[in-house]
Image 1 (tube, helix red, strand yellow):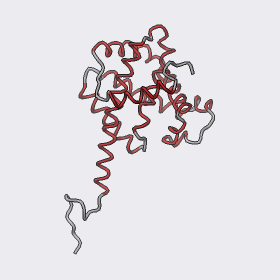
Image 2: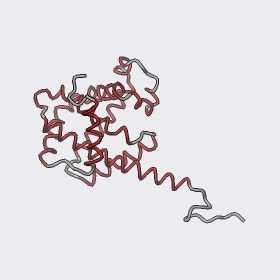
Image 3: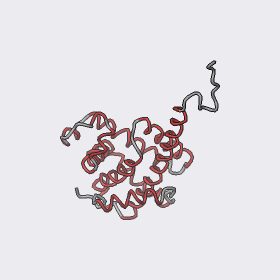
Image 4: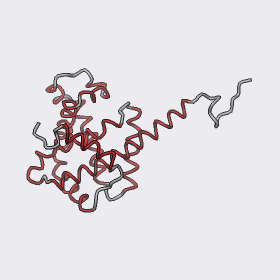
Length: 197
């Protein structure tokens, strides 16, 4: 696969750090590195989005269960040319672009990530998959950045993804709790009167 983080140990470590360092926000230096590298990545966002999701489905086939359109697709070449996958990849890349733009505006970034986490509750996309996307993004952008890719830049992107996915997980949990509360029967709901005679 050609990605330094593509080994199972590295991806597992990426996912574990995602929970341990959940609240770590990128430093000012890391933010600048991310923004500078994004200027290069942005030129290939459609390509990165497709590579990222094909790799995701290749390394974690169970993730396809979340995607109704791709659930039964076994042919990776068909995925690479899928208009639907390209469109979804572009939506994810658009979220990453918004996240990068808001790294200096924490309140706006937090609101964006929390909202995305809440919407993923309704997509039945559980938080356990979120860190996989960051790992595959990192693998997809390394060849694009070539010699610009450094250990420090990789650490900066990991930190950003860990921060954003921790917020998404929080949003998912908040929505899950809200939905459980709404599902409580009217008799048990403290804010609703029982009108039965």
